[in-house]
Structures are given as structure tokens and as C-alpha cells.
Image 1 (spheres, one colour):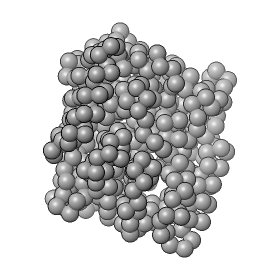
Image 2 (cartoon, one colour):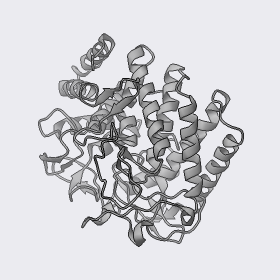
Image 3 (tube, helix red, strand yellow):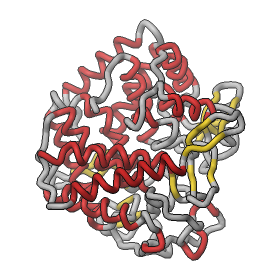
Image 4 (cartoon, helix red, strand yellow):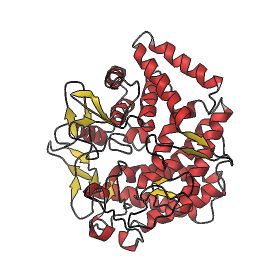
Length: 426
């Protein structure tokens, strides 16, 4: 797509700021900020927008939101950017109406993707791994577009119908025994399929809502994914807030408020546990039967990202205790090496950490020196590409996964913008 002068001027302004501290920040920022617009944004004839995740030719509901989020800073002054974001919101909610259990979609009904998975696939669906956050992110984007521009035309019938699908699904998945959803993939990689004939491990009813998979697209071990339920609480609050400007059908707002309260109660009753240090912390996953995991995922939503999502404040005592646990050896996916230390994942190799998590670490602290150190780490571990990756080896940054990963690029941009006081209004 054609890049407007507003965008170039904005980039030049940020690049100029970096000269006094680390010029490479600006070089990486410019390449990453332009990369998403130049290589992933596809405007359809009807004005809807398809956003490639990068080196996989599909659009993820989660990734596409994160990929455009920093552009919200330009939306108030650039009508084309505002229209692109609104067009993406429309496309996201059309996909949700098509199938709210799917996480990734094709641009057209061409049958690409994981069509051999044992679940209710259609030619429009790339992958049907059900993840709570896939439904949170489009609500978040629609709300943030409104908050940053005052725009409301995207709160149309497509949005309303999509919200009804989301709320109904989350209510159904409060008791997974009522669910129509199953997922089995023929694979040797156990993280890519659900046990028990595609229904997942056993859970008790808690008030929280069930998720099949994590934002890494790896399966949950215990299917109440705590940070994703927290994200659901946040976006349900958004829906209540905008109820006076959106023509929601009678009774829907009451459903939303009840669901929000039940999920929050479930978190309070089941997700707060004690770690090895004797501190109360949030578990990453629970099943309501007494089982839980003490870890975190480098994707977002994560326990690390809770202040960024708006679930709690940075100085919240329970969050800070959880944060200490995340960055300790108690977390099996915390790795330290010669070039960096941070959060890895079962999705990638041992001793590989994720730039997304490094960016999120900076976005969830008010310590400007810490932000500076993380920005330096990120540009020093780009493998010489001037782009961010999915993960890299803490002892050799030239070893990395996913050369073209737009979400990671834009998280770096968001951290640099945050460092200079440029924050998306929420």
C-alpha cells in the first residue's frame, strides 16, 4: 500500500529522537514500522482489510490486532490509517461470525491451511484452534479505535452480531461439557492436538471460560487459561462502557455484566496460589480441580502483560509477586545466556527467548533505564536483520525462528514509542 507523508513524518520524528541514545533503535524502528504496512496489509475491494501474520499466508485474529495497534497513534491525524483499522475490525468480526472457534483465516475461501484437522473446518478457515484471546483482541481493537479517534461507525451490525457470538461462546465454555467444540490433529507434536478425543483434559466449573489453546497456538494443559480470562474481563468491561453508543439488543449488556462478574470471581477463587517462595501469585493455567501451572507464555495475553492489558496496575502487589516468579528459575521457560535473558516457550526450542516478551517486559515497567536496556538488548539480538523474530538463542542471536514475524516487529515499535512517551490511549 502507498505510505502517506504523515507516516514518514512520524517515523522521521521518532528516528531523530534516537540519535542521541542509540541510532540503531531508529534504524530498526523505521524498518519494522514500515514493514507491516508494506508487506502484510491487504485492502480488499469492499474496504475490509486482511493482515498477513508474516511468513505464514493467513490472518490471525490476535496477531492482526497487535500488528496495527501502534498505528492507532496516527489514526487521529491520518484518515487512511483510521480507515485501514476500521476495515480490519470489520473483517475480524465477519470472520468471528463465520466461526468464533477459529483462530486464523484465509483471505478467500481457497481451502488453504490445516484442512485435514479433525474439527469443523471450512475453506475460509486456516486453523481452528480455539483460543479465548482470539475473541478478546478484535473487541480491544474496536474499542481502542473509538478511544483514540472518537470514531463509532465500526460499531455496526457486524460488530453487534460478532459480540453476540463471542458472549454466547464464552457462556457455553463456562461448562465445557456443553461445548460442541473438539479438535484433533494427526501429529507427533502433542502441543498441536487436544487429548480425550479432542475435548482436552478434565475441568470443573469455576465461572471462568475454557480455552483449548494458548496464544502460542500450543494446547493448554489445564484449560482455564488465567491471563486470557483476565483479558476477557477487560474487554467485557469495554463492552459495558460503550453500551450507551452501541445498539446492543435488549438483555445483552446484562449477559455481559453477569459473565464478567462470574469470570472475575472464578479468577479470585481458583487462580491465586502459593509459589515456592511462599508468595501468593497468579497461576498461568488451572483446571478447578486443584491442578495448576506456575509459568508464563512469551505471547500476549500473559501474566507479564496484565498492566498492559489493563487488568491491574503495575504496582499491584499480587502482580509484582507473579512477575518475580516469572523471572525466576521457578518458571521452566525462563532462560539466561550470554546475550540476553527472558521468557521462552514450549512452542520453540530450549534456551530460545522471545522478543515479544522482552518488549512486554519494558511496556510493563515505569523504570526508564530498564526500558532502555531492553531496547538495546532487542536491537543487539536481531541477528543482523534489523527486524524482530519469534525467538532467538540466548547464546547465539544469529540462530532464530521466523525471519518475518510482523507482530514481534510492532511490539518493538510500541516499546520504543512508549520510551518516548507515545502511548495508545485506552
